[in-house]
Length: 53
Image (cartoon, rainbow, N blue to C red; front, side):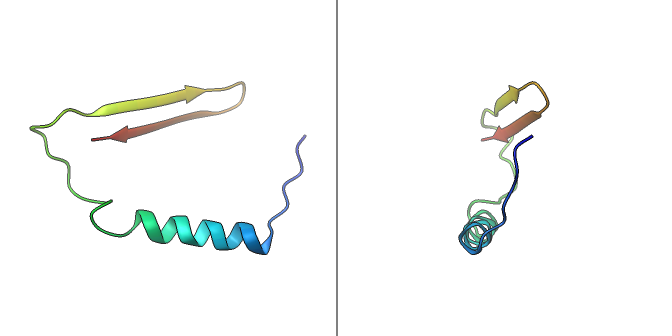
């Protein structure tokens, strides 16, 4: 089991990322005339996916 330590630097990085992805034009309505890309990953105990355009 991997121990997780929440540091001040980690919290600051998390807040910076949260701020960056919530600012326009990062979050916009999809343009259905353009292609979508699906990136996925499956590990031993995780599944993740990102849908981008």
